[in-house]
Amino acid sequence: MRIGILGTRGVPARYGGFETAAEEIGRRLADWGHEVVVYCRNPGQTQQVHDGMALVNLPAVRVKALETLSHTGLSAAHAVVRDRPDVVFLFNAANAPFIPLLHSAGIPVAVHVDGLESKRAKWGRHGSAYYRWAESRSARWAQAVIADSHGIVDHLLTNHGVIADYIPYGAPIVTPDPARLRELSLTQHGYHLVVARFEPENHVREVVEGYVASSCRLPLLVVGDAVYGSAYRNEIRQAGNGDPRVRFLGGIWDQELLDSLYAGAASYLHGHSVGGTNPSLLRAMGAAAPVIAYDVPFNREVARLNGRYFRRPDDVARECELAESDMAAAIVRGRAGRIDVMERYQWDQVADAYEKLAHALVVDSGFPTARDDRQRTPPELAGP
Image 1: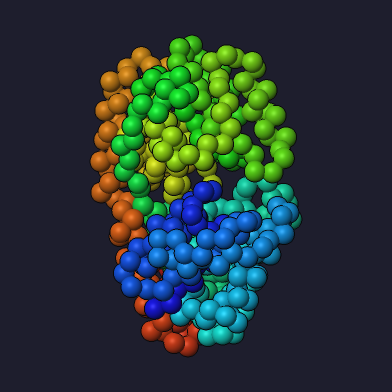
Image 2: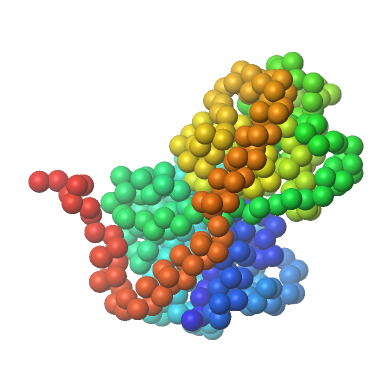
């Protein structure tokens, strides 16, 4: 089977959850005998094959509101004219306008909707309205809608009457060399850690505020930055208030070093609130990091009783102080979390679910029949 993966920045994965999913799923499908084509938007990339996946690198308009749409439009046109995959996995509900184009070539489409994108502050009023519209079009037009979290499954059912396919991400289980911590003058369990893009819904400012107000002895490492110029970056810096315990490291693209940071943290503070099952949280738990997560259903679904939770800066202060005062208990929680995600979030199982879905969509010829079967309104929502 020829499988197209559209809507991500492509592989090798260097950016976020969509890219990690494209790489982990795509290389397994390729290993299992499928032809996998991943559409990329990496300027200057000349690589044409990665882990058995064919790469098609296409340009994009480098403006926040247009980058994803411009690239996916080109990718969809390329798929229709040149590659003609048997099925497309389209990441990001924002790309819904290109579903009819793919259908025009007889290509069935499954859309991975990600999280509650319309709630992200960076999009503003018009962007949020667009995401709400695009999410509804994805639910209406695609042959299947994929949700990586039960919370997103519930959201799609409640708001769009669509029965989504629940397929989570996988958790990488990492045991990196702690010696790499010496590059940053760090020791094992000798710091608190937050890793996130600087966006309001990731609550980095609240984490820094809470930590600064605490009596913690161990430093706080802040890994990440704003993708586009952002006043929020300044808010985070100001929240640090010149506290020498807060170290801003910027973005770290060395995955081995980042894994060492996860594995060596006294606590990993995860502030993401709208993104469904978050790959950073899974990666941190796969490294046995003691998790302190923002208290939303998506994070509780992943960390369960192995996590601690916060809502306000004073919660952050309390939880960080607690981790330092009873480090043994924090380490035990981190190890228990790793065992838990090892059992529940496996990339082989994820890729198998994508393969089964691809086969089902190819077999279900006739778009209206397939769509109506997957997206009928459940009886309990239909009313009298």
